[in-house]
Amino acid sequence: MLSLNAKTFDPIGLLRLFVELDSTLNSAMTQNIATTAGTLYTLMFDYSPRICIVSNSNGISAYWNGTLLGNVTGTGRTENIWITYTFSNLAGINGLSVLKFEATGISNSFGGNIDDVRLNAVPVPAAGWLFGSALGLFSFARRRSI
Image 1 (cartoon, helix red, strand yellow):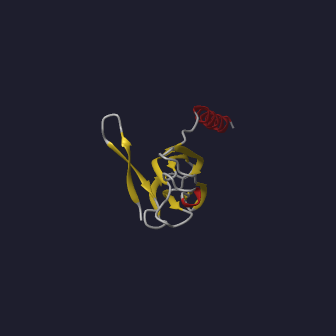
Image 2 (cartoon, rainbow, N blue to C red; image 1 turned 180 degrees about the vertical axis):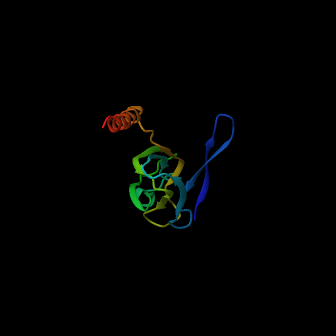
Image 3 (cartoon, one colour; image 1 turned 90 degrees about the vertical axis):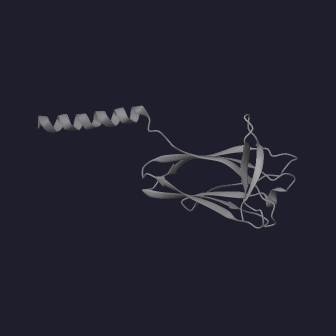
């Protein structure tokens, strides 16, 4: 089961929420995301161990299209300490890619927290476009001269 918890109030007074993936037992959440084959993506999310809980209960694993990206954990302090994790060069597929977060460790209703999940397409460098265009023009010019 998932649990939404209050993170903080932002500068204009709005309540910010984060997700805990072990509110009654270890659980997971997934999101299907429209992606394009050949496009690379960067995933970023913030993680904090639950306050005053040891690391063997705070683990969270991140998956992209069924492949484990990594495991994060830590020992909780007296307040949430948010760390941003980044995973780069994730290949998109035509259709829907699947992003999954899963609680790991002891299933005891005390788990790690995630917030501010971001997925961004990596832009193709302008030089790559220029080089590809030049090759295309060279090939076209060569065909016309034969």
